[in-house]
Figure 1 (cartoon, rainbow, N blue to C red):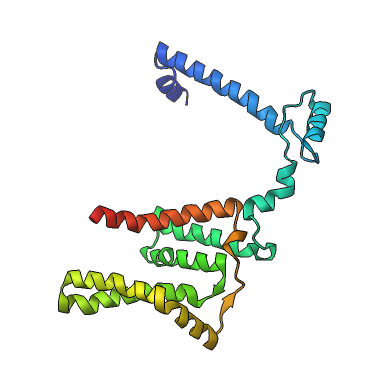
Figure 2 (figure 1 turned 135 degrees about the horizontal axis):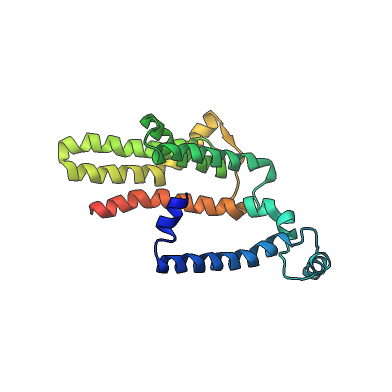
Length: 227
């Protein structure tokens, strides 16, 4: 460790000065932040009471007022999602880690990528709820597109096959999916309680938007790159 410090932080007069200045800046920043975080109040019911509590305890009034975190931490995490359904958000987050594992670590079995591909549909169903036939029908649209390509391309050429592979899922999703899902749900009702999007919020909403943007941008980016 001493050798690494000499070689990387104090290898010359300029690096030595830069290291000392950097340490001084880090020390100054921590000296401002750490007291503000820990010399604070968690129980005040107003800003004035918070300042008074910090003044009485520490002799200054510049600490953080954390009472809103204590009172609203569930709302900050889950928004207005029904508390009895928090397990669905927690399960979605845990399954996200499982879905990301084979993408991030090449040593894991490649067959786990099947779950990575299914996860967006499973997570959407867990978060929004409703009939289980909704995500199944959406997935079926991709199978219909592949089938359309396989049937059309050998007879009419690859371009016609690609067009069919695009149009067939669109027709399925926008025109046929609703009636088919309604019929399946009527014959075999399987589902969970539906939750409206306006009840989403907090950290959960940020993660949902981020994952949706990443998942949607990847295939669109590939299409644009190929184009």
